[in-house]
Length: 123
Ligand code: AMP
Image (cartoon, rainbow, N blue to C red; front, side, top):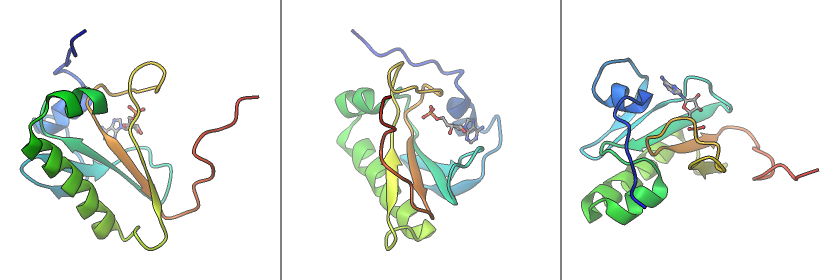
């Protein structure tokens, strides 16, 4: 099964400069910007600049330089946002079970308050 990338997704439009974003950090391989609906005092989305749907797509098909650049960008965002001392959570939702809304790989960096357990327990 291949990965099909939809270049009309909202993060592709952000990368093309078609809609604005609140940029935190940018490099050759990555862009980081504030989530439009923040769920914590720090809520930044880090995305690769290449056309990848999800973490599995990216890590199967991206170049080593893209992967290194993307992971370094996460480190830079943590430093810029000052979340390393008190801690943070990095989340990447994928597909239907992951409840992914935007089909361009993104890692949520959440911090600035205690975030609770990783997953809600099923009742
Ligand atoms: P996910 O459910 O992991 O796909 O999360 C998508 C995230 O993108 C949500 O947290 C949204 O609030 C966020 N989002 C959607 N549109 C924008 C936008 N234009 N700028 C910034 N964040 C956005």
